[in-house]
Image 1 (tube, rainbow, N blue to C red):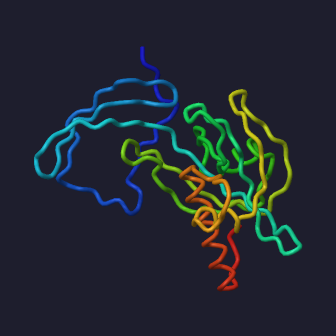
Image 2 (image 1 turned 90 degrees about the vertical axis):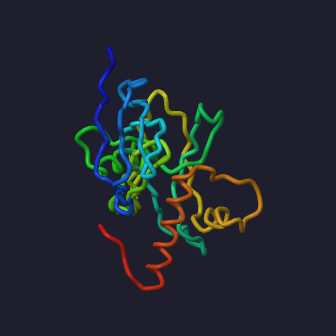
Length: 217
């Protein structure tokens, strides 16, 4: 007997996606299903009347948080809190933004507050939405909600048994220089969501500094 997904992430198209009236899903056949993931095969008809099969993965919606610490003083710029996490599928440890699933009944903001404290031990006084993006649109409609967390206060880290991670505080300016190819030395950021989140946060902070504006609470 197949298990139902813990909750469904099927929803309306995200802003920026244009529906193609010539595209049609003729049939969806289930290949695998458990509590958190569903794998199926789509039989599709395309606008030119051609047909083909496409793999679809249904996954729970997720959040990713850019945790921002105040300037480090002595000329130091803004710092961000990253986790260095063991990823068995990759075969090693990676620097990443804190992230995780949105539990059933949670809002994205509630999930972001929870995941931040569970993984880093920090509580956020402000959790500002940075938008929603698809994680792997070639295979899944899983949405990822990005947030900028600030006014951080130390709390209590609560890791799950399967989580093996360390917490690091790193200067945002140095990380952005690495992402833009302007830094020498070993690369640290090879994760897509972390790349996107850090650049988004850096651009937002730079824009606010130039305009003299503030953030949301």
